[in-house]
Length: 217
Image (cartoon, rainbow, N blue to C red; front, side):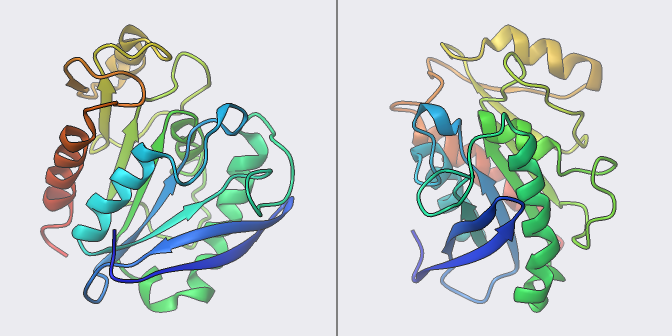
C-alpha cells in the first residue's frame, strides 16, 4: 500500500484507540482519517473497502490514519451505537495536532464506509466546530448508512459512492438522504455493499476525486 506502514495510539473516552498508519512514498501533502464498517458485523480497519480508499489516499500523497473502533483489536471499550465511537474520533482529532504538528497544518480528508459514514458525519462542522483541525478539504462516504443510522448533513463537495445492488443499505435510501442536500451520488453498476469485484472502480472514483480536491495544495 505504501512504502512504510506504522502504528500509533490515541486516547478516547473508553481508552486506547489503536491505529494503523499508512504513509505515501514521498513527503505527505496532507492526511486522511478513514473509518471502518460496523464493528459487530466483522468491520475493522483492514476491511477491503477501507484499505482500497487508503491506497487511493497514499497514492495521492496523503498519510492515512485507520483506527479500529472501540472493542476491535487492541482498541479499548465496547460498541456504543456510533455515539461513543464519534467521541473517540473527536478525541483523536484533538490529539492529532500535538502528535503530528506539521501534518495537522496540511489538508485533511475524512472518509468512511458504511457504519463509518455515520461516525464521520458527526465530526464535521458545525457539529464539531471546536476541533483544532481545519474543516476537511475532502469527504468520502462509501456505502452511506443512511437507512440504518442518522447521517448528518455533509459539505457540498462530499463524494458519495454507492453500489447499484447494495443489499445492506438500499440505493433509494441514499438518494432520499442526498436529495435535500442536492448531493450527487456516484453509483457503481452491479456493485454490492462490499464492492466485490468492483474495488478497482471504487479506487478510480476516489483517486479522481482526491486529485480534484487536492489540486491546489
